[in-house]
Each structure stands twice: as structure tokens, then as C-alpha cells.
Image (cartoon, rainbow, N blue to C red):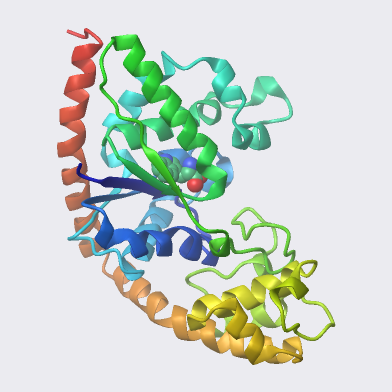
Length: 332
Ligand code: TRP
């Protein structure tokens, strides 16, 4: 069977190392194992939360640049913007007509983001998972690489696919498989090792942005929270030291070493040394990506052309599937 992946990131001004290492790098690592690859910039999802809906145009281009600069070739892969393919929202409407409200109220992300005053909670935020299901199923994606926090939404997508099939009495959608990334790809806040690195953290020092310059990277790592103890020799010695674990994990990723080897290098040393080495490793890795991103952003016309080509391919595939959906729904 032909394999097809679809994944996406919401455009925000704060694309950071967590998004890069957790999402984009895991996609890059599977490019040659999957027959067809669709990478969406899910701009319509950004409209569900006000903090993400500012500067949408600029942020959309930034994510596109990040995808390409990280190694997703825009000719070999389909990189496109969700709002350029109107079939997502059309399919999400059909899905909303077969999805019980109870399923959507149980989504943990909705519960976290919903307004304390229920009457003020926006319907778009509530319906977000039906749009995400449509993002995936409009392409009949076989696999969906996502972070642990999105697993529930992919499971819901499977339930919606099943409910749709039962409703129309035909196997229109196969159930897509989530690909959940490894725990090591979970990058934590530089200010609190128990919290995920997140664009919504009020402190800029909690995360490194892909467009941060070298000095900013150095300052953020220098100010990162640590503890006074020296580096242990065993991984078990990091158990109750989440900040230490996070910095050493980042070092392991950027130097392509195992955690065991990183601990061997740093055993008994202090954090000042770890931080200096981590700064070098981070800059080494990120500087070429940042510089490619800036080049791409400086040539908007070419960047937009890539996105148009991506949208053409996406529209082609989606329109065929949509014709089938309209037919099974008995729309004239
Ligand atoms: N909901 C995802 C997130 O917040 C983003 C997303 C939207 C997505 N549509 C998708 C991810 C489809 C994978 C597939 O991270």
C-alpha cells in the first residue's frame, strides 16, 4: 500500500527549538521512508486563539521557511498553506454533522484552552479537532506524525473516520495511524524543566527561537535554570534534575551523541562548562538553518511560488476525495 503522511504546525511568531526538534526534525528523518509527503501550515487553526492570529501572513511565511531550511525540499514534498485548500473547511463541516459534542468536550487541549466562562468560549476552538480530522482525512493520509500532546486528536480523527464510514455505509476513509515521536524529542522550557518549551510561555528566556541570533542564543543558554550539583555519571542521577536533563539532552541531540557519552564527557563538571559547550553546539547547528530561513524570507516571491505549487498538488488530491464525499452524502 502507498504510504502518505500529513502533518502541520500552527503559524506563530515564536517557532522554537521544541517545534524544530520535536516536529520538523522527526519529519525530516522519515522523508525517504514514505511515498507521499504533505506538510501543511495550518493557518486557519491559528484563528482559534487570539494570541496566534496576529501577524498571520508573516508567521505563515516563517513556518514555510523553517520547513524548507530544515531540509524538507519543496519540490520533492508538498508544502502548502491550509487556507489555500478550501476542501479542509468543507470537509470539517460534514464532520461536524456526525461528531457528537461529547467527543469534542472531552479533548484535553480544548479543556485547557476553553474560556472559564463557558458562554464566551469560541465555537471555532470547540470544533478545532473536526478541522484537524479534515486536514488529515481529505488527503486519506495513512500516517500522521505528531507529538504526544496531539495523540488524542489523531485518535478522534480515527473515530470520526469510522463514524463517517458507518453513516454513509461505505469505507470512504481508512483509519490513519499516528506516529508518536520519542520522548527524547521532548524539549523542555529553559526556565522550568518540568514544562514543555512552549510559544505561550510569557518568558522569552524559556525558549530559543529559530530566528534568534547567536548572541541571543548564548544569553538564553547562559541564563537557563540549572542546579548547583556537578554532572552525574549515570542517567539515573538525572532523575530529579529536569533542567540538567534537558540541557544535556539538547547537547546530545546537537552533537549526535548518546546521553551516556555526553555524561562521560561531562562527569563531575559544572554547568558553566556544559553551557559553554552547549552554546557552541547549538549555534553550530542552528546558524546555517537560520541563515537559510532569512534568505528564503528575503525572497518572498519565490517562497510564495513554492507554496502555490504545494497548494496545487494538495488541491488536486483533495478535490478527487471531496467529489467522493459529496457523492456518498447525496449532495446534488
Ligand atoms: N493541532 C496540531 C497542533 O496544535 C496542529 C495540526 C493541525 C495538525 N492539523 C493537523 C497536526 C494535522 C497534524 C495533522 O500541534
